[in-house]
Length: 243
Image 1: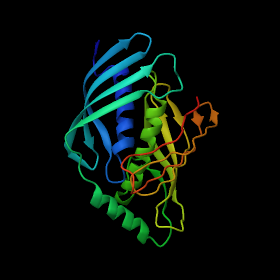
Image 2: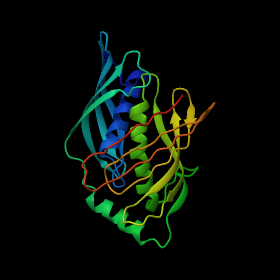
Image 3: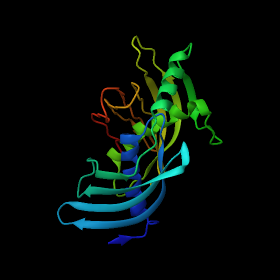
């Protein structure tokens, strides 16, 4: 069944697909976001669930003049509120290389005399200091995993703000950050906070723990995320948002 791209079911499936792709292909030097949902179709699979077939146009927030097209399939399983949707994404074309940007970020963090501490990214006016943009994009990566894992046909999550970030002192050469972030669930208008992200730089991610304490509009989340030079894609253990 064809769906108008502007309809909520299509937009929610697209948010899950973009979250999944951010988690897989994002990093401190790349921030993927949806420019346009061009086409959406829903397939009802008896005894299985609803599969959304999507055609998306994506842009990199660091290079808005360059876009890539992708197709995605998002399968929501029937009667399963606690399992992540199955997502398959195919990028048509090449994403911009981030190797130099990643190295620049790594060297900048390593050159600081004290561990980095920042809060409110973006600020109340929507501004992000240029030097903190990679930190913000690291939060995009981990929140992409949370969005994918917790998406349903009735939810649409969005990373609203990094409330606080602190670099953790380490005895090795890896980079580690603890984040407190605010997620916004756009359907129920519920906000979730905070969760902690521990990151080794760059690119593979392991989310070790996620726990929550809910109180009406607020949910606490704790996550650990690891980056490794030796792995080509993120590795993640269990994480769940508790309603």
